[in-house]
Image (cartoon, rainbow, N blue to C red):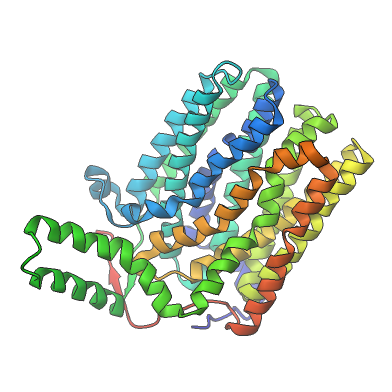
Length: 462
């Protein structure tokens, strides 16, 4: 189903004034804040207190939590949370519960000394990552259901802007500043308090209506009817089995029935698109430390200056997607990400240079923001709103699974071959994504969407 492209730049830019698009800025903040606190900021903390790089590299595997969230996404999609769901609705109730878990995990990390109990630190970081991944499932479902498909580019751009403000300025630069002038414990306590921005946003925004494909509703009802007619199935099993089929089996079978054999290629494409930048990211901040930059310099350049370029890239990417469609911007983003990673190799060869760091961070963050907006919009358009959380979790899990597994060995590669070889290797991992997006462009519609088709039934959040 081809989506209408907005005919003027003014119309495309005006989408950012929509109330729900603006609200996405704050939900993006809530999603972005925990991420650096269990990855880049945490790796800086660990290296700062003397933890070896191989151990830091293994911490990247905590990120696999984000890549397997598809396993519990059907629960987030369908299971009510008693009073929370009745009070806030399905999406907002799960957001609030996840935010409580993030706050608890961050406070636990603040009270832990990684030089004395690295295992406890890893387990608490895992708790934060699990709660954060759960929050992502709920926020992604809300973002897709809250607006029409034509606004998904703007939603992606605003989400990424809020995400990067939190991840870079607050969870990145802010955490580093606090660690430099106070302590790592104080830094993580303040980060836990900062999650109140997300909590307040959840309390303010409205629960979206869900547009469910009529054919999907009929398909699920036939499953339930079949189970009810099956006399040999004990009554105590009928409802749980029907729920499992509707919440777990149907989302996956619907996607494959809708897309046919093309579904496999889509999943492969999703799995490799982000490899280049995710593999590089795990060693970026240890690289800055080893190159001789202070935490203050990293905060000023890699965080404060870099976030401006990321937001600019995200907003430009969202506008370009709205104006020209998603596939061409996906290709542009893949090329930019792979190319800019080579600048890190150049910096490793030339040595410590503030000017060189500014150039590297500017290019890397702009390309990452642009590619991210295009990819989020692409994934959003693949979902059937009957199974928003589950299907998007499948896509976003695949997006990070292979990169996170590969990035776990990044410390070993650096220790064995050095930073220059590692950054060239990270850049080369982006070549398959460029080739595959070219192939996908030749065999899909202009917007790359796999439409669910059929009439929609509106389900009120009340």
